[in-house]
Length: 213
Image 1 (cartoon, rainbow, N blue to C red):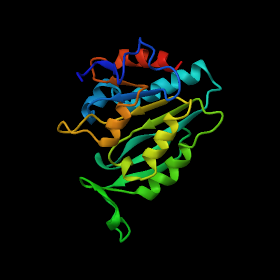
Image 2 (cartoon, helix red, strand yellow; image 1 turned 90 degrees about the vertical axis):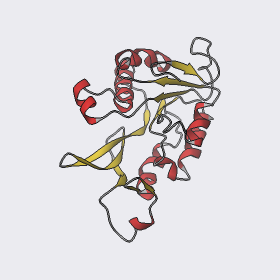
Image 3 (cartoon, rainbow, N blue to C red; image 1 turned 180 degrees about the vertical axis):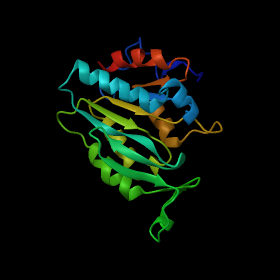
Image 4 (cartoon, rainbow, N blue to C red; image 1 turned 60 degrees about the vertical axis):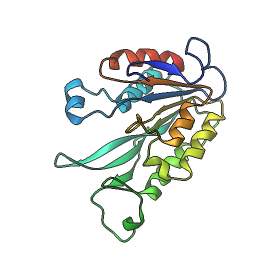
């Protein structure tokens, strides 16, 4: 898929494939460097979905949003890990490059980062439980670290079987190789994929927001 494109796994947005059970909007794109993020005041996937959430809350103050977003943990200008944050501000460690303990030696690794599955699950899994009043699920992101949890992706599939929309971010394939769970998500019959880059960052919010509003 070319950067800047908008496509659906089966059909287009205009064809109505977004209607019905399992509405799924996926935002993908290359990682944004710190320098670019500073220069352009937030061009990344997380910034985009948080802006969409803000607009939804403004237009419908009673809407119930559930889910989480991910952000870096930095020390002295250096990235030392990642954390997950719920939409009401609760936090938990996702991964760290500085923790050294007997327990952490058993954690799976992605590069220099050790993934704290127990910490991630303790915060995220309750957030992904379907409730009667939930209007939208936010998942940032469905990536390699998060998928070390054996319960995480089944929770995502459970959401897709409900009548509650899902707005999620997924990584762009690395070296042309996509994560199997991400491929499965992209191939969902009701998935629409929006690819973000710095040239379309301003317009993308206006293209995604109407699909949810």
